[in-house]
Length: 246
Image (cartoon, rainbow, N blue to C red; front, side):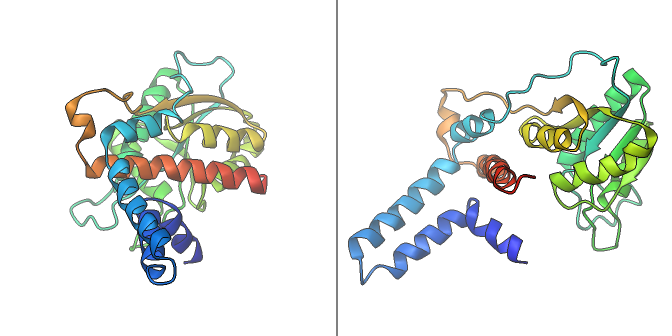
C-alpha cells in the first residue's frame, strides 16, 4: 500500500495533482508561490499529455538496438510479464494484457527461430489467483504454439524477475539468455539480469516512434499521458535501483 501511494504521487498524473494541492494549501500563507505551483501543475499536465513529449520521453530509454540474429551462446529465452486483464470472464486461458501480449509475441518469434527453451516471469496475481506467469504460459502455448519450460510466478519487480529467474535457471547450468521486454523497459531489465550474473542478449520489442513535428503531436492525448507515465516509471525505477544497489 505504501509503495502504491508513493508511486501515485511520484508519477504523472498524480505528481501534478499533488503539486496543485500543495499550491492550493499555500494560497493564504504564500499566495504568490501557491499560485505558481498551481499554474505549474496545470502546465506540466498539459505538456505530459502531448504526443510529442511522450515520444521524446520514451525515446530517452530506447537506446538498445533490436536483436538481429540468434546468438550462438544463448541457452534460453526469458520473457518478462507486463500487464494482465483483471477481469476477463470471456477467456478460459491466456488472460494477458496488451503489454504482455507484445512481449510474448516477440518471445515466440525468437523461440521458433532458435528452438531454445522459454522461461516466463511475472508474479502478478489476478483476483482469481492466477499468476502472471501462468497466464503468460497459457497464452504462449495456445496462441503462439510455444511451450514455456519454466514459469516464475513469485516476482513483483524487475529485480525480482532477475533474482528468481536466476534461481530457476542456475541449476540447469544456464548462464546466457535472450531477454525479451519492451524497448523502454530493457535498460533496467538488462542491468537487473546482468547483476544476477547472466550474460544478456537483449531482444527489445514495441519501440515507440520518435517525436514528429506535426499538428497532431501537440494535441492532448490520454495515450500520451500513459506513455509519459511509463517513461517516468522507468526513470524512477532506475534511480531507485541505483540508490539501493539492486
